[in-house]
Amino acid sequence: MSIAAREFVERKIAENAVILFVKNWCPYCKKAEATIKNLVDQYEKIDLVKMAEGEPAGSDIQEYLYTKTQQSTVPNIFIRQQHIGGNDRLQELVANKSIRQYLEKL
Image (cartoon, rainbow, N blue to C red; front, side, top):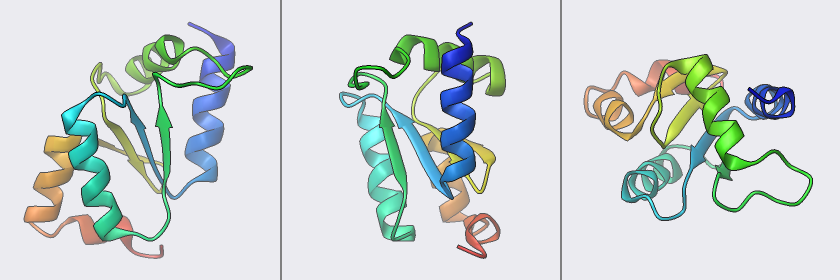
């Protein structure tokens, strides 16, 4: 596991109230992002396919996310530093309105 990936992920989670780790070709990621856009004004999206030069590789980030969350798929969503899960979990939280508890204070 890459130390740089761990530091990158932890920094991004700490700096952003809502953050999605995605892959640009993933339909579940697109659905999750559309849902998040309807819930909050600001969020961060990290596309693991299009990492900038000098940033850790997307595969290293995904490997660290698996270590941290035991979730190997994308999207990988955090709200207020809490791991939400993926798109299915996000949609479930929206449907039963329990997403509100995560979004309070945003």
